Image (cartoon, rainbow, N blue to C red; front, side, top):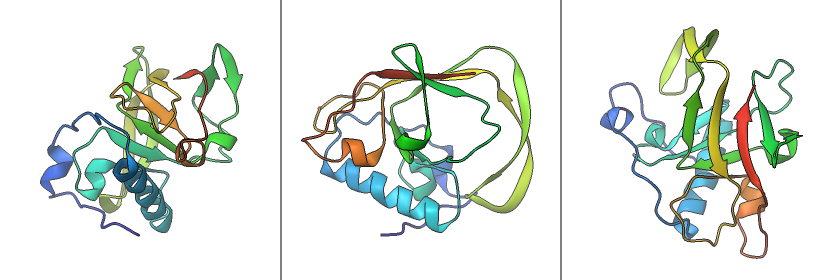
Length: 162
């Protein structure tokens, strides 16, 4: 189901996200609907606040990006992003390292607006790939296909760095 994307004046956009305490069927369904919504809107990322829910959850899909500003590592080894897309991140901890990089960006909650946005570069996101059935509020990232069934386990830990 495609969800309604909140726009600039919605209070959820100014509300700090609550930690996701348990990854259950409701959270997995929300992630699937957010991915469907993001794709329908031709976006590359969507936070739960953007669909009116102040949760620490976002979805990301950036396949086939030639000038990728970051890399993913599992157990210290570089990993290709492509097989992990789309990705669902739950309770991520973002780390920055001082430098910034300017990029022209848009936002699904501010339709029609684009601008140069300074972003920390390089930056990292600390999370772990985890099975969907685990009841945990620890940071998690996984592709929905790999985390949506109890018979599949996501392995390793990951961080994103340049």
